[in-house]
Length: 120
Image 1 (cartoon, rainbow, N blue to C red):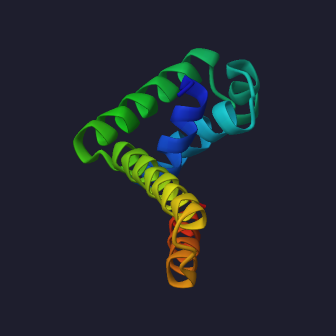
Image 2 (cartoon, rainbow, N blue to C red):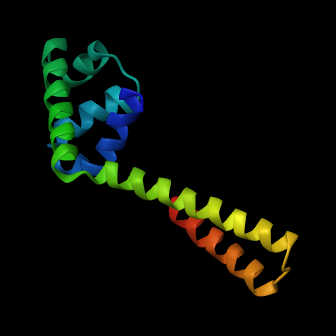
Image 3 (tube, rainbow, N blue to C red):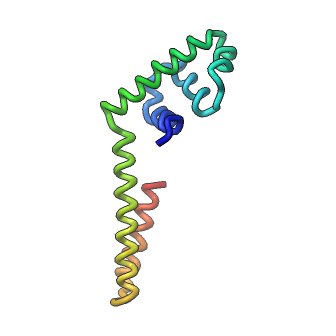
């Protein structure tokens, strides 16, 4: 995952654990794509102050992920759900080629729909 996207996703998971300023600076920098200078000018502080605040906030986000692992767990769950969808496709295909059971067909459609709804 690219760093910008990763920090944005970590901000979604753990942002409430940061201070308002830290959240704002990260959001301005990663989500709104403002430069350090632009943020500094808008906030009335130095560019270096913005850079330090962003680095501290990023470090906190990565530490929280290291300890809590919510993003890692989400990615594992998403991968497993995609695997469930793939298995349902195999079962459905096999059913169409051999048994033509309506129950199997309906059940695989339901499994795929449930798994997809959890991904989205």
